[in-house]
Image (cartoon, rainbow, N blue to C red; front, side, top):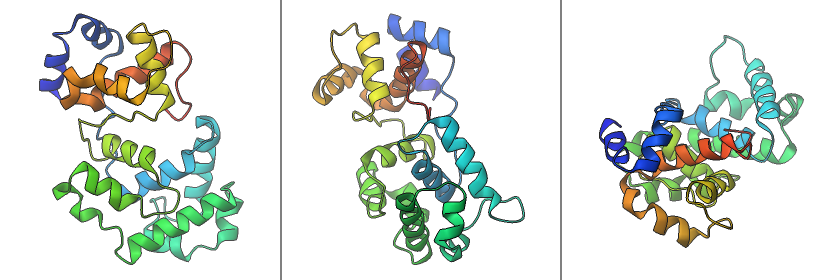
Length: 206
């Protein structure tokens, strides 16, 4: 991380962002792989406030104060999950996620030895997990520094404001603009979220 920040400080505009927003300490901050993916599914397509409330209710379904294991989620009835405010569709996603962790379809012990692409393909086997969710997992759970979620609206808006573009950039435009910092795309993405946040246009989950 220190190497990345020192590199980005050589760019005057990014140096200003680093001074303004500080260091991206949330990258690689989530250790529990299953918990991180459960959170990603619950937070999909709803406001951060609503998702946080549902997450709290979900955790309250289990005794002991610890986040549930995949087996516990697998055994929990769909009715119980829906009582926490989880939609029928997301209930299916969570049950499928738990099942795939239990039966070994998803084996997160192998992730440290796998490439970004291999992990994405691995995770997309789960219902409800697409490239965006895989990208968030790679950034915030595994701490991979070279991820650019080009499909994320908040990052698109961040690029628009930071690079003074007239319109939201295409995927190819974003990759071209980020190419000088490609090795540290995740950190660039974090600052783009912050730029969007400053304009009150960040995704609520962030």
